[in-house]
Image (cartoon, rainbow, N blue to C red; front, side, top):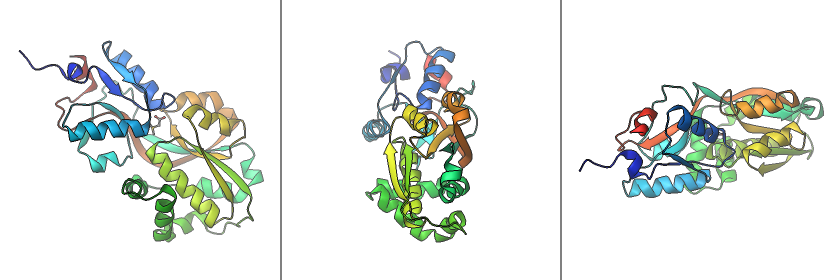
Length: 268
Ligand SMILES: C[SH](C)CC(=O)O
């Protein structure tokens, strides 16, 4: 008989990540808007998703995941985004840095640095790849900062270091934000004199912590679309310091050996 449809081959499962991630809400919307009524979105984590991806690619098995750029998986594997003609995953997204109200007055040095911080997906990719190659995140961040002193100096030029002031960052365990948060922690500590605590939390608490002032800042806000709901809820309770990275993207991703081109093809 005819080969099983792609959906049947993957048991109609899209391998997702942590339930609070914006990409999960977008994927539930895609399931609805593209009429993928047979499909289920599997919740888990970034780490579980990449482990399943590795296993299935090793076995050359079909799989579809919630994916995003920048991510080390695109340099490790031959992957492609499924076309999204209904633009459910938006256009070009950005990763923003958000800060609690009052941080500018309380910690002008940290605020100015966080406001200036902006880098490229290639630069982030160097840290993500080093972590994938076995470096601890804090080691990979230190190595990157030490070998990119020019970039670090742009961000800290003329700023007055402090003497051990406490500072709290929050982030979600997405490989991209593990990289950026460890870099921010390294620079804030080693160059600007802060005592930094980096809290790894779910996406919701990442936003609520900054909004209620328990956390000073986060570099993990994906906007304008991915975290639109969180921003709508907290926009008057946070300072949006703008993009720390532009041209990022989320969507459904398959290994290139999967003969599917668009999200619409999942309906078959
Ligand atoms: C998975 S992306 C890093 C962020 C998000 O989906 O909330």
